[in-house]
Image (cartoon, rainbow, N blue to C red; front, side, top):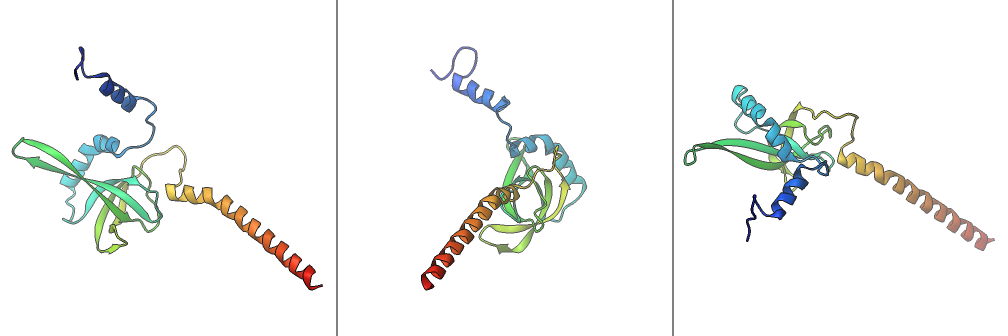
Length: 173
């Protein structure tokens, strides 16, 4: 009942079609894993990193001065005689908010925590994800969207304050 003549059921085919369709235009870290696996493996092998430093790609830049980094390790498993990829997702401190989604970065542990989750700090950006135009970080874009609303709110509060002061002045006279 699960298998249909000619392959998997329709549900699996629909999921595959959705995955490959143009409708998936959001960036996903799995894309980078597939594209840069060989590059990162070679880089780690040729340029020996200190044991505690890791290389990964930014998968989230929505928070100011913070980035979420997916770090890959490749381990040879004797039982299957095959190299497996293990992904560790960590929060890192990005002091200048310079990283964007897709950038390949090098991080090292702070030795202490900044907040409940951030335990790593950005060392440097190894590769910038190419973009057509300068796209602001998600946190910056959110602040840009909030700015006009906050200005309107401040203007409204000032107008109300002025009206109240005029009413009080007329009551005194």
